Image (tube, rainbow, N blue to C red; front, side, top):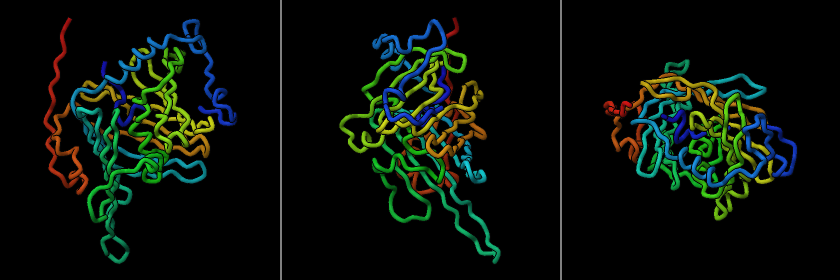
Length: 305
């Protein structure tokens, strides 16, 4: 079974009000088969989580994307971008351009330079992120830890959301099976690494909702250090491209401000054989549209039973 959202998007209703972390973590069941609150088998949970972590698409991909910002008290606005992704020896990797300001011409006929945020994101157990803003001199910068939770291009998404490092955190608790959105779903509470003081001071834990039927992450909930729910990230649409299922929309809701953002895939190519150079730091020195990128097809064969 191919995964609906990998890597960057291993991605998450929130009743914010209780200051108790345990109160925030209570989840009600809705089926006789549900095991939430019944001391579920942790070995089974480990096997489910390992299977989920091992899922990936066949070959690389190219997506034309759009970010829709939906602040609660202001008009929505849109920015566009491009994303390429694949899987390295360390895990999912992606190269992204987000056009924060397109090139334009002012009333006097003068050209106004555009601004593009270029990102290189390596997910997995040893995750890292690099970025460069077009027009800035010098080499790309490694994103420092305290900037991983900052908003991207004015949206509610952060690098922490997109890279989903919490999927690979070693300490977790399997909370059991729950009927969620009409289907059986496994819930996991992921604990931030104890040695990361900076992260632990801001994040109390992350809850994953993994579909039992499709082995995909359908929702993520991110909690603050005091147990308050900060964000919900969830898949809002799915489509099939080149025989592979991908999300067509992924929403993030800021549970404190109620502002939202939506990441949409406008069009996509899947099963590509992408060059390794695309996922190196040098690629950040120029916009994706200015680079010659070979996108040969990746052929995958499956056994017929």
